[in-house]
Length: 441
Image (cartoon, rainbow, N blue to C red):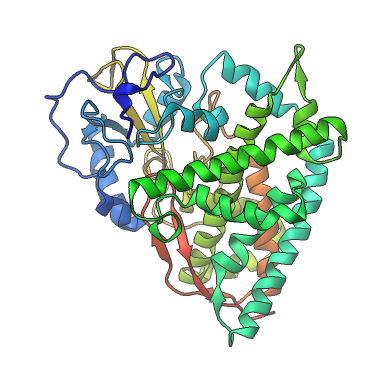
């Protein structure tokens, strides 16, 4: 199996730190055990690190997919202000080596991370091309589709619960169903491909789950390779068809998008399709699942929301995504030697931004450990800390969450959840299963 020492990283000569003797912090952020903790347990570690007002050096993530003897660890960015600064200094902290804590071959970064794993000038052009596809007309069509799929997901949830004696899995039957249908509809994926597409989408967002991808590195790589290959093949086929016979779907719009005489290649469309598959699915699936658990645990917040559901839902969604922080980390790589918060960062060092910590930073978020659906202002950074990599799909995510939660609480206002089954992850805040008991209103 390849190691990162065999891999060329664009813009960075090495992915490893040049200082193997730098002492590690005693606070554990690197183990699988830490990734298995719940939010409150992780927050105890984050609070210690934030209080110091600097950054900290940690061992490489435990049991990486690619073992690299020259990977000595990562810098942890845990405060709100530091995360914003790292995000905006895209010349010093680059994305092309990949945004995961773990080392992946550049082919995986190129094929699966799209805009996330690019730096200017390529990122600038790619973002302009992709943004050109999200026209007001296209977004109106997508919004109508989202409302239809929200109704269908709640229909399915209530039917499955009734058939199962009143209880069913919220993730499988509702939270994960709606975004998957939305993406298939947005891209106008043929009915004959939707079952397979749904499976590969699930693999793409569940590569930390041995029940989905297996428990050996070979199985994980094989499953990821298959998922990425399938998504690219499907997107390329659809793009070629839509260039000949364009429709109203997003693939047709992406295939026709043009900026300064340049268009997206089929490979770039495939990469963006893969990214949208992961990001479009996961933000909604995780945030909605965490939202239901929060409403169950905080009945006073549910009661406040239900008093004026339509008017209060937009603000509540902002608090739900802060509370859930579905993407818990993103990585950057130091493009040069530099000083930051009193620490010497070496060219090639991994710099990992912990969004889950920044969203609980009391310096910027008042009462950060309290769920407050009326919070205003709510300066969370769930969708990024600004800069060139601010989430392009943030409005799509918000629209999906508003639609699904409004439909759910309108039709089953007393729905309650049990305890979630979590999937340990150093990237995502994954609710694997969440038993629920809907009570139609």
